[in-house]
Image (cartoon, rainbow, N blue to C red; front, top):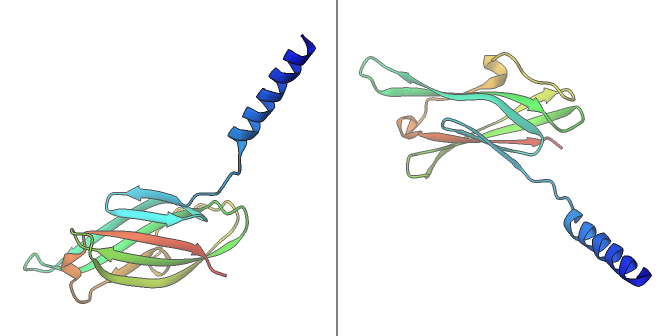
Length: 139
């Protein structure tokens, strides 16, 4: 009887060890309409793409706005790069980098043009359909 209890306990310990395994940190991929974030140091609190039209109803400028929350458990400087894609997922342009300093646990609450908006008014601006924000700790 004692051997059965010992064997049962051993099996439970093995199962516990098997399921606990190595905890690997995954990259966060959060999304708002047309905007996706790939980062392991910040979360996306809010984001949008704003299209500016001229009098002929043609897109002449695109603004990408974003707000972050620091999840890195330390003060960080975030390097922000934005990849702009067309409807067929072809890269149109890459914007940035831009650098933002975020204290531990800080959540941005307001859009500041010099910090949280990246604009593009160059070639093929009218083709931009969606963007990917890449935010990494600046080392």
